[in-house]
Length: 408
Image 1 (cartoon, rainbow, N blue to C red):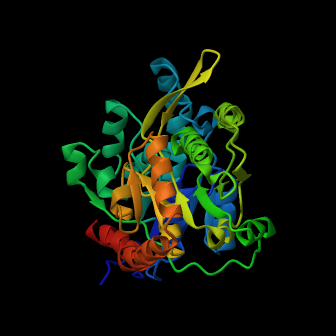
Image 2 (image 1 turned 120 degrees about the vertical axis):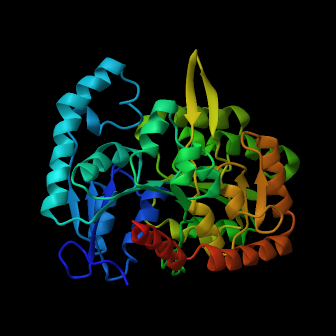
């Protein structure tokens, strides 16, 4: 039996703090999957740092949502806060962070919150201190590899009374002290209903016998689209140009415009004309039925030369990619990279292929191997479907998180 909530009615009031409101990317979608499938004994309040697709999704699902926008510099994204000097961060902590934390603390007390669950590093920095000041336990969800140095890791690991990691690969990146307070709970996914949306241009490709390789990811450097473009060029050189189409489904993130333009320029230089970027799609599930396989060429870290003396860092925080779970639900084989929790999702040679990150030739070889063998693709897809149903269900995900709550 669960412990009674602060209102004495046996219902726990849990605040879910989400610091990135712009996109319903993997981490936010996984939190959505948790919240909308909670049992009646947990009453959620979702607090989001701004209006956007995240708020829209929860409101549409009938979940109670509060938008609490952090002031000034606290509401900057893309690691902009970390790029400031130590003195700048100190001034922000006094002038902006402290009042905002006190505001959240009052909300926690006034709403009768029993526990605070933060979904990201920003939440750990802002909502976790407020919860501790209010005397409430904190669960910090680590959905990917921490992109920080020692101080950032130290602060995150101590933000929560318990840490939930999405894979053992991510848990292994914590310090020994952090690992002792962490438990791995795999993200879960339900059976996905067929989308009513039809895509005539993909139907036309399939009718002509063209294979479709789909990549579901926002176009940001660590997702590795530049490696996929080079793999496509290699396959085209081997005679696949008119026999395979690469379809990249994902948000064209504004702040990464220079990277996107460089990728497009690389395509022109290599003569690659069978890669399509669709941009954001409200219904990405419409694309899966047209795919023969999916690919996600993510990297952990790279320095990318954009030319003209401009370089950028591809510093990833992959954890347990949701697109792999979706592909398995649709019975598709997967080509992924050996980072974070991917090897825990994709069994190399059984449900797909796992290659080293940052290697377009290995990526091309794995894709070609599956393109040449339709029977093997079907077998891998079926084994993937069985695996996701057995290990990565929504029920197991929710029960795993509730067990963490109960332990607190």
